[in-house]
Length: 136
Length: 136
DNA sequence: TTCTTATCGGGAATGGTTGTCAATCCCGAT
DNA sequence: ATCGGGATTGACAACCATTCCCGATAAGAA
Ligand SMILES: [Zn+2]
Ligand SMILES: [Zn+2]
Ligand SMILES: [Zn+2]
Ligand SMILES: [Zn+2]
Image (cartoon, rainbow over all chains, first blue to last red; front, top):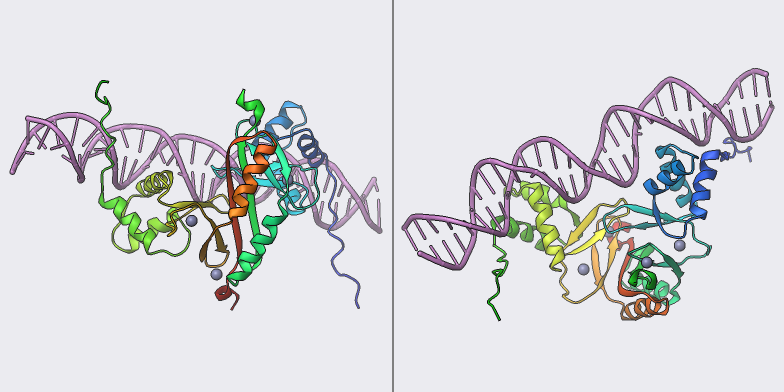
């Protein structure tokens, strides 16, 4: 077997990516790319908006961050603690998020898909509400 | 008690709204506003794009049509047969949609929210896959 | 250090969606 | 039948999140 012709696509570690990660780690709620970019500027550790988008996309692809589509279609990002598959209970007011899992739902989705002859199954499940703090 | 000062917000019936409904009724899959607008033009029963958006928004508000957010954030619309709350099994290839319901999930969402002190609970749940036709 | 090239950044481009507002049309009242 | 006012329409501009572009920069191997 010939040696791999393509050298391991070295993923360089940059100040920018680290800065984005730092903001994510200090954030409890789901945030938009624009909000994260603004926070970086506020901290005096500015990163180009394009780079913020690129970083988040890459982290999302490698499952380092979770994404969530808001009603208006804007994408929100969050660095979750749990490493396994889970879902979210999100406050519409402040964005406070609780990680939850529903083992029953996972199986349900698989079975429903199989029953109708669908494969390559994925699913989205999010719960929205108003947290006790926002109820005042 | 004085008579109602605001006359019943009469919802007028127009050719445009009817045309949009006709397209929706002849469509099996979830479609975007742009696709629906294009189909209207193709049928020679053109309706302004703004009006298409307005009609769909109003029908969505009155639960006459279901909406679905695609990964890229574009909103899709479908006129479902079932009148009660349900979810969707959608083919990523052709958009073929099956209406399904998961009574267990409904209760699970409510309980999870309550357990964490959230109220005014809503949830989104969609299953995506590849239908047998698209597997061909 | 030097070289290769992944990465960055800022500005332009994209594209779905909403806002604007004069012209038009529904529909109940006359 | 006709009138009048308010809902509705539609062409176009504005909006805004996201992506594209490409010359400049800097990480990392040699
Ligand atoms: Zn998560
Ligand atoms: Zn809250
Ligand atoms: Zn439906
Ligand atoms: Zn299909």
